[in-house]
Length: 167
Image 1 (tube, rainbow, N blue to C red):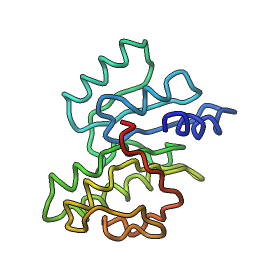
Image 2 (image 1 turned 180 degrees about the horizontal axis):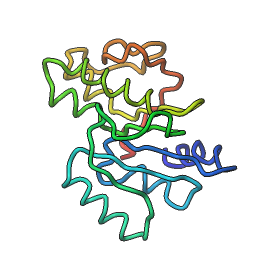
Image 3 (image 1 turned 90 degrees about the vertical axis):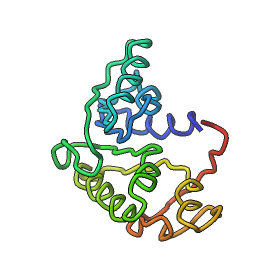
């Protein structure tokens, strides 16, 4: 899986791209992109997770930027990012906001779209089981078309890759 993601990021290697990692946590995505032609900003609402990310970054002399913030109200200017990634972050909104998780995910999607530059890409990495099972849908079959059960009606799924057990 990491090789596939790395290959995808390398398609942009003719110039330095900007990547925003929402819910950066311990730094899985920045660690993957370190040393590539990518200016990475990792954002997380948790100071403790940013500290863990900072520790990982120091161990490899990484050079990405870390900021504390909420993915539902990003402190990033519109159109800044070539790639906006939310890796394993939407599931937290589902568990933190049980009554209104769909609208909270909607806010995060709106922000992802806002900060994406012209031709920018949105990447959502999520364990659908966590979101869909808690929503009462049960264990999902890999979706095609619209992911309506998870409250992401505006997201067209172009490719679903089963990654179980790789992280």
